[in-house]
Length: 215
Ligand SMILES: [Zn+2]
Image (cartoon, rainbow, N blue to C red; front, top):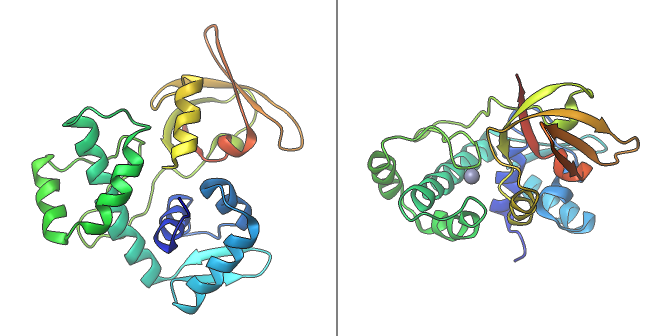
């Protein structure tokens, strides 16, 4: 599936584009697309006044872009909670369903779903669910690659991207688990996580989309 403009806006917000500049490399990794398609889409988003682009630095959401992305993420994450809690989907299988549902969900439906689910705070991937008309500002902004070797961390949030979620499930890594960052290879090499006798070797790209809290 080729990512559309909504997917870009949501990813930019998930990566922290409400407050800081997100570089093209992070978008390439998060959406698994070519650098050329990222540049092309970003210039469209600039024209629509949804992002501000600073050459060689990155993009940041405008107020309009933030409002738009927040509303979509709210619908997306509410559906994810519904699918996991009520229909017993696994956390790597909800993304695509939610992706479709978010676009056909009116504000009224989203608000009723929110009430039905008893106002959940987080989605199954640890992302914050904004209130109706509230702009999303994630509290968890640091990823595995932002901490030095030896730091003890709890996995707090992962980016909603199907391949990434499948990869995490294959590695047997889940939200809320605690690990020590045991090794980091130089030049953006793999990151090694350790917990008791469990060792996980993560690619740098994936590690840079996994948000953690120190413990
Ligand atoms: Zn999610």
